[in-house]
Structures are given as C-alpha cells and as structure tokens.
Length: 148
Image 1 (tube, one colour):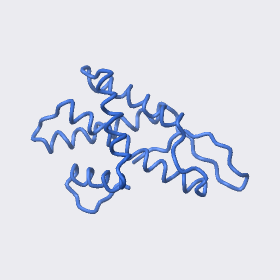
Image 2 (tube, one colour; image 1 turned 90 degrees about the horizontal axis):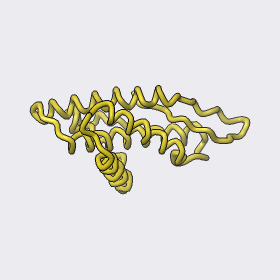
Image 3 (cartoon, one colour; image 1 turned 30 degrees about the vertical axis):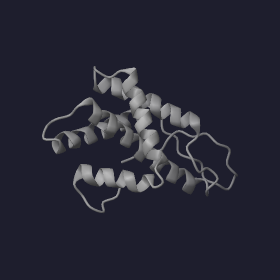
Image 4 (tube, one colour; image 1 turned 60 degrees about the vertical axis):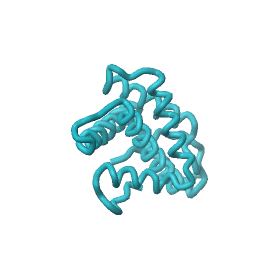
C-alpha cells in the first residue's frame, strides 16, 4: 500500500540492499493514495471538499509514507539509517507537487507551502505515529486499524 523511497547509501557487505523505486512509481503511488484519501474525505464531509481539506490530506499522505519508509529503512539497515535522507525527502515532495498540480488546477505555490507546514507540524508532534493513526482511523471510520 505504501512506498519505499529511493535511497542510495553505503552499507556493510553483510546487509541487504535497500529497494529502489523509480520517481514515476513514487509519483503514481502518491497520486493513487492521495486520490483515495480525498475520496474518503469527500464522503466524510457530506460530498464537500475544499483546498484546506486537500492540503490536510496531502500532508497526512506524506507523513504516513515518510513514517513507514523510515521504519523500513531502520529495519533494512539494522538501525544505521534512522531518518529519510534529505535528497529522498526532497524527491518525494517534488513528486507530491507534480501530483497536486495534476489533481487541482487551483493548486498554487502557497498551497504547497501550506502542505509542507502542515507536514512539519505533524512530524514535530511528540507522537506523530499516533496522530497519523488517529487521522486515518477518523478518515476511514475505523478504530484500531492503524496504518503504522
């Protein structure tokens, strides 16, 4: 359901290599997931969706994918890599920007900055994982069906 990001890092010979996913595959995955989340938000909002909803769902889509990717990185590198490298994070945000321009003709630079700000707010939470899980439980009407 979620993606593994492109990471190039020197690992010890006895460690497995990190799986690489193309930018196009990442873009497609983000778009599919964001569209699914926006459809759920539309249904939850009585068939109403505004740019604030889009910004919020885009930020949570990024947060869940980054948290899952970082968890996978930790596992694949035996803890040598704790956080997503900045070039991978930048590439994911570039992919998201392209997706947002494709999804909405009303998407502007300041909306993208709002997404980044909301993402930073989510990730700076002392328990970002619980916040993301709560968001998706509310969005999809489930209790305990955590995504992370």
